[in-house]
Amino acid sequence: MSDRAESTLHLTRRTALGALAAGAAGWALLPSRPRSHAGVPRGRTEITYWEKWTNREGEAIQAVVDRFNQTQSRIWVHRIPVADITSKAMVAIGGGDPPDLVGFFTYNVPQFAEAGAIMAMDEFDGLRDGLPPLDPDLYAPAVRRLLTYRGRQRVGVNTCYTLGLYWNRAHFRERGLDPDQPPTTLDRLDELGEALTALAQDGRIERAGFLQNMPGWWPTIWPIFFGADVYDAEADTCTIAGDACIRAYEWVQATARRFGPEQTRSFMAQFGRSNHSAQDPFISGRASMIMQGPWMANFINAFNPGLDYGAAVFPMADELAGAGVLPGLLEADVLAIPRACPHPEEAWTFFKHMQSVGVQEALARAHCKPSPMRTTSPGFAVGHGNPFVGAFDAIAKSPDVKVLPQTRVWKQFSDLSISAFDAIWSGADVPTELAALQSRVNDQIATDAARRARRSRA
Image (cartoon, rainbow, N blue to C red; front, top):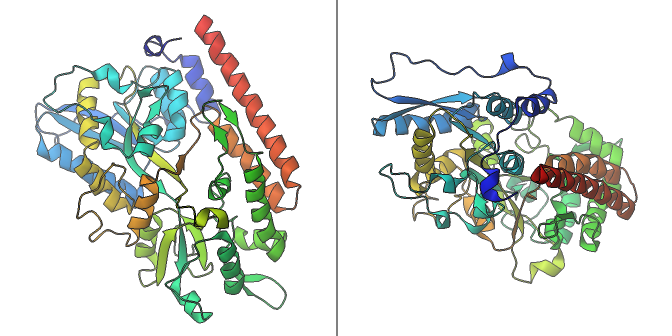
């Protein structure tokens, strides 16, 4: 099936309902379309924008929407916060009642693109709306990769993030360590993690130096810091059982053995519902170092503004540290225009507004994130909510940065990797566990490829 033919597909109601069934939701749970009200100026075309963000992040995107509504006289955007946005968007599009725009995750892009559920950007070529055409070179190269699937830009960016190491400077001073010298290698991270850990008399962990199972949200990230990847895009193959990946998870397992799998699991369990709150392990001072995203500064500012902390590029294997590379993971939130939306031209106008450098930098500043654009304005970091945004920005712009595998089976891959990580943490044989994980994922990739082939012949 060609890319152009693909754009004519329509997601069936049955497919959409199947997607939602996994979330145990129903049609009644879909967000209602806002009705016109007195607050909307006369003559505006009203469009609906579903977005997953709430609280502080939701307030930031609402401010962007409000500015758009106030600075032009043709369109009025209604932002609607939506939980479980992937399933609900799929149902709404399949049911023939989509919003005009939807914000979701990059791992959703292959699924929505192959279903013909979202419009590719080149479908708007030649539209005369008085705005300059979308310039894909505005994006940082790795961000552009995330927005592109099978050679076509499918979505726009709505902030990006990388992951760094946060450390508690007061804890460093307490143990006689230089608070201005975070670890740059994994060996040094291990040394500091052990020095900063505080144990009770019965062996329980009272304060963790560094644990890879906390917060536990990125179980496939560790090979990146050994110069490896878990997916070969050209071959469409999972590679998580490679030699460097095995080394990465043996390093992870060594931490579990050092402090005890059960003790570390018990310590982490205390914070299951506390992340990004005053009881967060790092914000509360119960963890001296943690891998987190740039948004962490937002929550530190809210819940413990006096915390003396730093953030830097995450350490890497010793052999990479002197090689002039800067590895890391880049992910992004994305903005899409659903196929058959009520107002595609107005949606495109707002979409392009959202892709401007000024808007993206304002949103990034409010979210404490780096800019997703190729270059940043000179004053971008001045007064930024994350005083260490430069480290996260450097990773985002690095030629060595990795992006999430662009495959429809990424969600299954991620889910399977959680149980594999837990087994390795508990002491399972690393090569055996990774080989089994790789085999399961590649089976799913093959099944998905066969399904695509059948569709193309239909």
